[in-house]
Length: 166
Image (cartoon, rainbow, N blue to C red):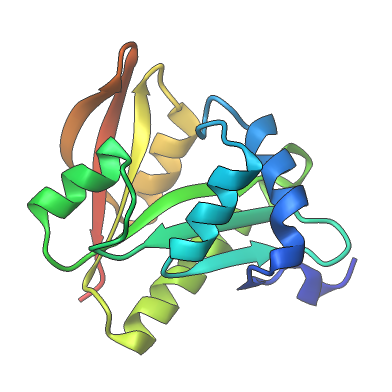
């Protein structure tokens, strides 16, 4: 594996099958989806990045305001912020965790946001109940702060997070 294989690149249509498998292996940390749903997410995303060449190791999907996306968490940010980028999902394969791939994907999104001057705030959510302690620690470490909480569905409470890039 070369160093370039562990750097973010644009998500390609050829990544769909591997991304779907990787996504659903990581449920419930990320919502389980089918191929049609993943294709919809990619089609309407602002930025989608992937890491891996022969094997997909990680990917992320983001949205801008006004996307035709019905996620209650995305809708919360849409109602509370006029300019933001919402990171809907970031998925890293279990065998590649602790290799900074998540941090690299976040950095790629932030760099692109700054370059494009599209929004000053990056947003996302993290599960509080059931708790995703690793994700909570990670987001605290890279500068996110809690801006709200909500019950996304019965039995699932999330912490709504924002990071100011100004």
